[in-house]
Image (cartoon, rainbow, N blue to C red; front, top):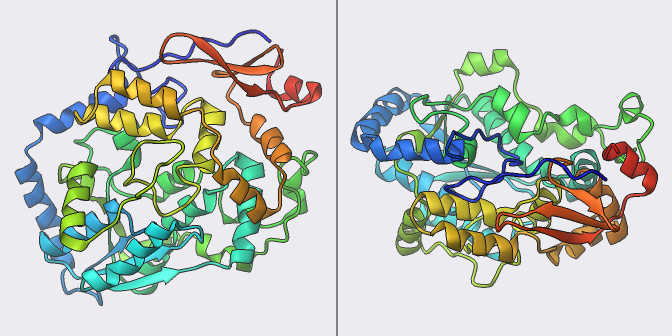
Length: 410
């Protein structure tokens, strides 16, 4: 195989040019995520706090609840609720899409929310039988078994907003601004259906999960085939119509546009004030202990698939954020990437049992999603360039010669 163009890395953080979140690089090799984060140092945050207060004021006491806050029970969720109540004086309704695979510590944190906050809390738990099917089908279709989580989080709370006539939804940070600098901090971007469809749902929607022979195509066995998923199984994934949104006046704002967002500051506060728990063990694919506790696969198998596809993982995400905020040097970040990003986590075996799949099939399907900008085949092994300046091999090739020709054009 011809070696692909060399992956480049940001000169400030550790993000690669192959990032799943779109990046642009300036003439000094700095990525757009770092450039946009630099804007936060020049923002008058007191002024923005006053802007936020003016935005939420008209929504107070206008409905059964002042706002909806989508929560998963993590550090961001707690901080969002804390800020809405303590700083903005709002009475929120908490809404959770429960993806069925919480870590024990994440489940405890989620349950504790109704005890430590004076709020009502709706938790929606989809059928486990149906979720196993969606897990498996999404893995075949896009190499992401957690698609249902991304879709559910960005859909179910909006359904509740429409059904209960609660116009204001308060989200935390805008992930694509924080990671990749998709928008300027001066754009004051709000939550939209377009962002949900194109980015959080990867361009797929509920009807792509429902069995439809016309959509299966000639490679249906490779892409999931028939799973027995009916429309009734994925009602939680149906986004409200434009008319429904307009009739209620649904509006989703991001706190990260108005307050300085630092996960370490937030974590310290919620531990001290609410008894929130971080993970007391060691993750196999990242060094952080306070992030992504609402799903056992988020820091593991799901993130390993991102590494397979794009050549980097959660340790790169966390290190890049921490470098930008001054919690870590780039040299230390590179050390974390080298230690964690390539690890094939043991929770994959849990997921394989969950969906009744062999590891051989998992590896074969995962290989079809490898980005040819990142990976090449040499001597029966997968190879990629690394941030520390040398290429390394990472595991054997599982594709047949025919599949190699299809997915990696010679």
